[in-house]
Length: 246
Ligand SMILES: [Fe+2]
Image 1 (cartoon, protein in one colour):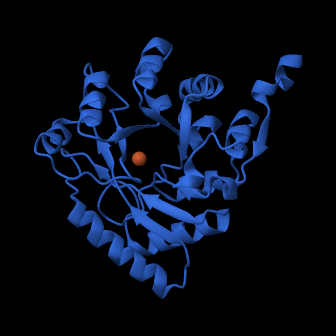
Image 2 (cartoon, rainbow, N blue to C red; image 1 turned 45 degrees about the vertical axis):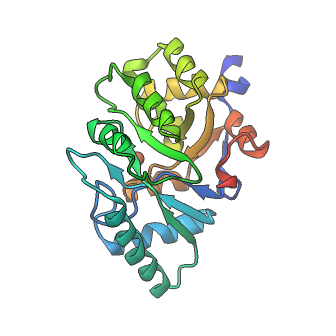
């Protein structure tokens, strides 16, 4: 009975002004599986501002089998988006980086010494398949580091094939990879197992960054009423989560 009210399970409404900067979303229209058109993008960004965010670093997928996005394509999309926001008098700072899928294309970019788009300084947002475990997880992240970047692992809690493989999570973190929580993972929005992994990683201080990973209006609706664990609220207020320095 008392367990229901334990500190671990207590939740509180999120204060987005504490997060300040969202660093993971898919808001450039038509170039990945995020916003399909400019009208939707403008409406979503208006919502971000209403939530309390003051800056967005949007991160289109670079996943070569599906989304062949280059810095040029992303840069052009960002320009169009900024113009639309100005036309609608929506005043919010917006930048673009990318979410790099750790595939052969990325290894190729690293080998050729091509420039990667960074969240800030050397921070690069990376992701693996959420379906199948890559046997070279640690090696690929190491390659990114060797090329001079600081990898951020997007939504580690969504890699359910790593459920209870806590040693591997610890090893990746100990190697210097930063962990980014998807905010909606704490609600069970991606399933109970994802929520359970998120809870473990949160309680063990893995996360340095949080992101919405917003793709569509459904995500926005859930963000509007989001309640987060008290532990996350503490990390946001005591400066352990780095979003507000981006
Ligand atoms: Fe994403």
